[in-house]
Image (cartoon, rainbow, N blue to C red):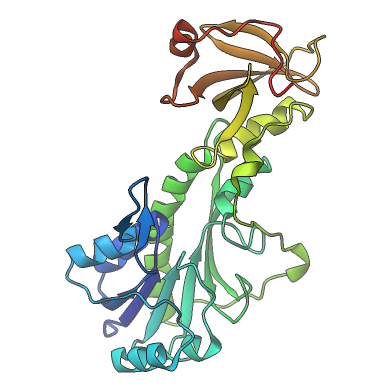
Length: 314
């Protein structure tokens, strides 16, 4: 049996936590964790640690939170840790070549797509927004580019017809941890053959913005169905009904051509809001009125009057 590896784990958000847990449950040794600095969150702007830091502290691991990893100080800290391998999961910054070259096995990354598709910060959300039938996890040997390194291992999964980005995020986070452990075992025994990416097939998955959520009802119902699921839970799709903002969730394509203009509410009942789009209709089965919590349509309509014939975003 090979000797346990010394691993430095670099990650920040919720997505990275299952991978850290999987490493801690395995035979190798996590000698330190590196994550982004604490941030002010919420209305009170209270300084809050990132999820990876919370998990690491529960296990008594040393935590480094440099403002930048492109300094000689950070490089020297890494030299002293003497890692055999860097494991990077949604750390949030591109690592410099000197840091990638320091461990004898280099650095590997857990990415939430089937590379080279959806390189970037929001691969899970964009896969749903674009109506993909499947996605997965890629374990990649890191280089100086953004998600451009050689592929070591992939695991593909179907995307459910009603699955939201949030649900897929949780599922892929767990899958990432499982795939990572398997990849490291094969890496230690020389069983992984790096495969260069076909850069001609690459697509980007940039960060989402709140502005993306304003629904354009001229689009086809199927496209809006994917958009609403892909923006759930954040930033969420929204529109204005009688001047009040509503967030939209749990969409359903209804294959009926409306005679009303796109954005018109054709029906409002316990099943949801039936809205005309660029082709078929779309039923919105859950809503969040401004200033209130998310609720099903029946509950919303008991407290909010929405009249058929009203146009969303007039």
